[in-house]
Image 1 (cartoon, rainbow, N blue to C red):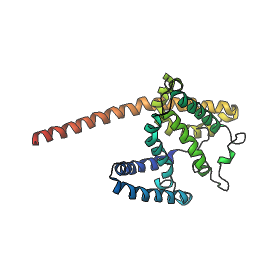
Image 2: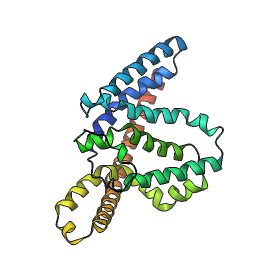
Image 3: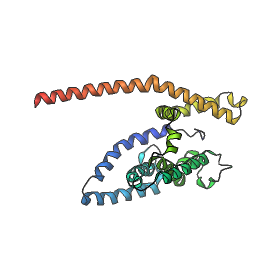
Image 4: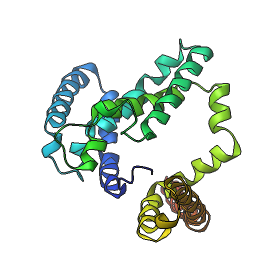
Length: 243
């Protein structure tokens, strides 16, 4: 939100990944004589795509596949990590993750992570999203809070505010970019400090996201759920009649 990098381009790769993930899921549960060779072939293709990711269209999943697979990998090793990580160790990892998150929102002119930005890449979108070090750091933060439910994580995310943000997260993800554009193109930045402008952006994004959740997301979810229940119920009745 603070870096004002548009997120709308991410919708296309995410939608495309919905078709790739079932294939990965199918591959995991195949016998080793099928899983191993196809696994090596998939790893080779991912490595090739990673090397040429700058030349690939950003709206295609193939240019961002390494990011999605990092998330899949974290989810896959989560049960194994949970089996031997204590609550204290998980808490330490989570505190470190919070420190990393704070470091990533510090302006790069004063932050220690200037080395994360790619040299010779003029496009700010590419500088922000393509750098593996930043991807790994954010992936670590997700991993740290996924491996265990600790008192620290419950205080941080289990409160009413954290749960509300979780409910509004999809709308917040989509709407904060238009809000940033609207605020920065208005006259507000001329009258407010940088911090006050950011506060206005955050507040307006939250208000609009809450409105979107209660007025659009919830009604659509209820309608879709009722429709699916009715559809599968009718299919089941026809199946029972035939049998």
